[in-house]
Structures are given as C-alpha cells and as structure tokens.
Length: 472
Image (cartoon, rainbow, N blue to C red; front, side, top):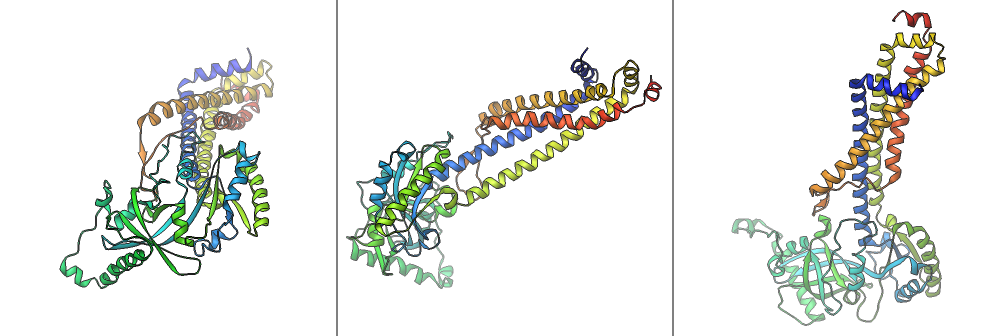
C-alpha cells in the first residue's frame, strides 16, 4: 500500500476535521479568485474608458502637459496633418493602429445670455468622425457600450456640453435634459442679500455683445457664447449651437465639459487663418502593442518635428493619466493583502489538522516504526496528507469561485457608482482573465498546505518507538 493511498484513507477516516480544513482552504481560494476577478474586470473597464478618451499614445508638443493649457498658441502642433499622414502610411504602424485623430484642448468662460448664467469650461476641439471611432474601442472585450456623440462634421457651429454644465447655464428645458436639476429662483430678501448678483448677470451679456461682433446674432435658447484667449492674450468669442447635453462619467468633468468641431475650436483659439492642434491621438488594436508602437511613433515624430522645427514628445495613457497606475496599484495591494491573509489561514488550518492527526495516531506511528517504516516514510505520509487536503481544498474553491462568478454575480446585473463618477458601472467578476491566476491559486494553496504539514510530520517522524507504543 503506497503513501498516497494511506494518506487518502486517513483523510476519510477523520472526515469531519478534514472537511472543515477543506472548507477553510476553499473559502480562501474563493475569496482570492473572486476579488482578483473583480479587480480584472474593474481594471479592464478603467482601461477601456481611458483608451477611449485618451487613446493609447499621443504626440504632443514638448512641455504641453505642464504649460499647454495656459498657452495653447506656443504649445501646439502646426504640422499635424503631415504627421497624421505619416502615421497612417507607415508600414509598421499600419498593422497596429485603428484611429489617428487630432485634438485641440481649450478652456475659458461660457455664457448663456438667455438664462443669464455663465461658468468656466474645459473643452476639446475634435474631428467628429475620429472622435466617434475613438470611443468605439473595445480591445479588452468589456461589456461597456460604445458612446455615440451627436457631433457632426456638417454642423460647423454645433457643440456638445456636459449635463452638469447645462445645469449651471440653466439650459435644462432648452436641451430637454431628463433628470436635470434646476436652480430655484431667489426670493426678494435673498436677492437683496446677494451682493454678487449684479456682477454675475453682467458677464453673460458682455459675452453676448462680444459674440455679436464675431458671429450673427441669434435668439436660439440652445446657443451659448464661448470665450477663450488667443495666443496674443486677446479674448475671442464664438457662438455655439448646443446640439445635446451628454452626461460624462466623472462628475467634475460633467460640469466643465464642452466639445466642438475642430475647425470651430481652431477659429476660437487661433483665429480664422491659423490651424494647429494640441495633440495627435493614436489608438491601437490592442494594448499589448503599446511598446512596439511607441518606439516607431517616436521615430516618426522626431523626424517630422526636426523638419518643421517643432519639438514633439510621445506619451502613452499611463503618462497622461497617472491616476490609472495609481488605481491599479491600489487594487493590487488590496489583492496581495487578501492573498497573504488567506495563506496564513490555510497555513494554520492545515498545520492544526495534521498536528491533531499526529497526536491521535501516536500508537499507529509506533506500530509502523516497529514494522520497519523509516522516519522518512512516516514524514512523507503526513506531508502527503497535508498536500492532498491542500489540493482538494484549492480545487473545490476554484470550481465554486467559477460557479459563483458566472451564475450568481455576473448573472445578477448588479451595478455601483465608483467614487468621483456620476454614472453607475456594472459589477462583474472575470475569473478567466488570467489562467495563471487560476493555476497559481491552486498551486499556491497546495504548496502552503504541504509546507504547513511539514512541521507536525517531522515531529511524528522523530517519535521514539518505545514511547509511541505506550499509546497502543
């Protein structure tokens, strides 16, 4: 009779204790796999949202991240059309790239003369077709629907604002926004105490007067006046017809968001003669192509920048949005803490089970030694018992984790609203995101159980035969 068969018989003989130990290991495996699957799904959603908004790579003027918004005239790419053509024609990048589109970032003040309200904004000028293609990316295979913007190339003066900005400008009725909060009018006593009211009401009318010099005057309640500073420092204003208010995923962005067609944004920032952008966004088919694409893109940007006299940098979404790596590191640190905690529980559970088995079978150990079993054989017997408990418990936990994830959590259709966001996201657990995690969990718990059985097994092997036979 071999060692494994003896170990299996001993596990069955102490079925109650063995079952409790198996369940402790199974719960540990379930906790690690479900949380790791949740982290994988959350990070996949975060990557999808980030890549849809920022692309994988951006070619930007040197120093733009630090100073660009304050000086768009200096930190801009004037030869962006040649750069985009070079990227599209490159034989290496052609196999990786899905979208190449320009973007102009701008900021300033927006006013609604009809509603007598104004607010600051952070806007982007985009190519409508490229913008929509950018937001259709789903290289991770997530269940997040692609957003469709109403920006159109044939509506030269049409823009989109966030729902939060629509609320601030009092445009809920004009844009027919559902679930849009409205500011209650002040009473006479409150109005008298509001010392800043006159100044607040003056700004939209001043914007409207300045806008009338730039564009024909209209009385459309869905129109806003957008002000930005030109490279010379002089203010410039355009009148924008708001096509729709679109709710943004982040609340703070929702109260500032403005999207314009690129020609209109360029006219606002640079005037009618000059064309430039803040960045050229490059989106890849898959994120694992990032490193290879960056090397090739840096070479193209360096050559074109040298020819045009512009110093260009290539940044990936990790550089542009450091919060992505911070969130990923935060989730992984929590996962590591849970893994260590479950490992400690498994260690003591198996050590306790095997230790009790050694204590109860002292007479049996003495008999086996008297029959000629060596110390190594006794040690191997109890180590095999611990290893089998670890293997069975981890396999059971893995199977239960898969069933719970697929038929309970994912099928429930649950959602939650993460901190800083205004829209809910679905709760899902992707336990199959990494086969290495599944096999690693089973192997890790089995190894921990084997190691934890070593110490009581060594104690059993060192028993004196005569002393052990007294317990027969």
